[in-house]
Image (tube, rainbow, N blue to C red; front, side):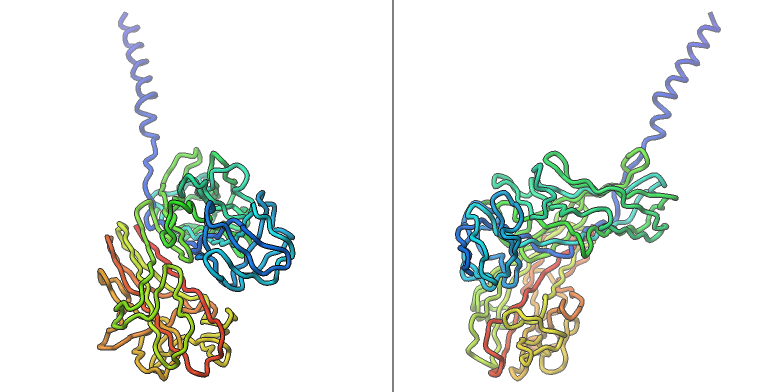
Length: 491
């Protein structure tokens, strides 16, 4: 009997060790990445509106004013390339795209060349915006040689339109939760990976298209060896050939233009059994003409708002009323006279390491949107030059006082409204209007910080004050460029 008792005791103890202790020892402790972020190369929401009228041979197009992601022309700009589709999104009608010549009013715009085919009044006008996603993160746990990086990117809740090359809209009864990025046939060859802290032995193994029940996924396998904890990984999703297409606005009836639609991109590392090692949800916010990138599942809010005329801003009184998406100087009749305008930029975030906001322009102001080649293009080139302030050579990164109307161009200054986050101020160093140029993308200038803070902020707000001064010899015509705000938070 004793032998039977000892045998049963040993059997019970062995079973306990196998079922309880050993599985507990093999459990994985997952963690959050540090410094995780996804930065989009292009901030702008895609444009998608319904077509009301458009006759063959005509240069005038009218859009529907209700029931679509975009119900006005506020987010349509001269030089935008537009595609007119039928109701089934069967490619561009006549296999032709057109260029927006000018925007007439809130529902009408002109195109070039004239329409080669009559438009489908049940179809859409689309201006696609795409972006390269640069996902950067620091490992909390090592990734073993048979592990992987697994990225999930939101796709619209639909079966057939998640990879058709057109921006996707959510159903009008929902917000951004049902919307997403179109895959645009992006594949493994359009994705690259870099490592700091371990050998760059990564292989982009799979890109899976989203559907009605699943989002897009990207799997990047680890081969040969492990990648140690604290290694910094950068995944670049997209290239010059293929990029994710930014969504169209999520809900025209419930959202406000100028307020971002926010999406969560899930980032995780896994072992060879697909157990999660590290994981974060990275928030990215997309807004009309604005690139906003956020990090690690927390809150980031950026709002650009217009300022009415006769407002005191940056020590000046504004001459025109702006909106979140335009600074309409109108017709200039007073030469060698400063024209003043302003917008407000409001940021809030609970990011532990704070945020930055940067600004740049696509080019100097060109007549009819022509390219202003180089940083010094001026009226001789049919361009409104970026200011040189009082001739002392202010740049995109260095400010100087601009008080003399004998010096022409476009520039800007800053003033804190709440907080002290502005990178410089109009009255710094006892100046009257300390100014800078906008960083010129065409001239390959680097976008510059205009706001930053190293800790969370409930409400940091600044005036961005625009100043324009043209000479009496500036060639007559319609001049424009585009200014872009980029916000990034780090948790």
